[in-house]
Image (cartoon, rainbow, N blue to C red; front, side, top):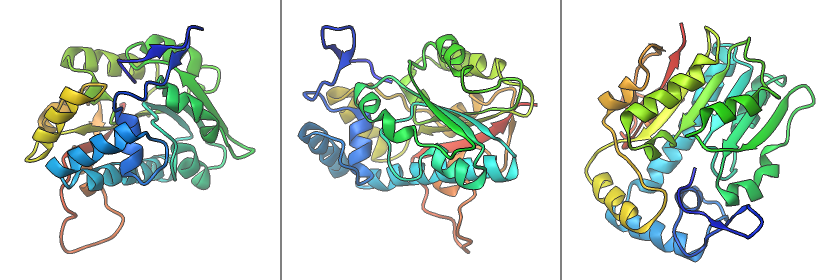
Length: 269
């Protein structure tokens, strides 16, 4: 989702390489190649303020993998609506899901023009499954759901993936209304997986820098405030926690380092 897009004259948003953009900086931190110098400079400036941000990006990406793995393997979910997809990298949602269940169907949603340009990388699929890409905005859940019906069967459980996207909705009531609308369409047994920028030393300063120089603007929320976004759902253990600590893969006598991105999964009763 982006708030500042130029128009190429044909009604299609054009890529603005003059302003740092969150999706491209995230790609830079994750070791990708789809960013501009302005994004690299902004990303490095943020790392000067909060050196842990690259680790936070990687922890959030790892959370996606563990969340999809749980949903596909343990919960038996075969349909995923991934909103705020971002630029494709390794272990995208369809890759993780279809390794476990080749028949999985995935709809990706984003409205960033650079993501759209790379969308074909997200459209690979196992022969048994399907993937689709929608150019749409989180703030219009009705349009997302209407288009997603072409690929997903909403009479069967769906996992709605909102990773690092709701933090661009400043109004908490609007955020709750959007989530509610998306889940109203889904039957009992569906899930919400959500991660969100939280508050913490260094991160607060980094977000302030970002909101002054980049787009779209970020809103931080505490773990308690993020937990409120799961109202009406059954939160899976361990609840809303730093995403590095949500069911880590490697058993350890000590908890993984906490990151200032929290995450959780809830089930619709």
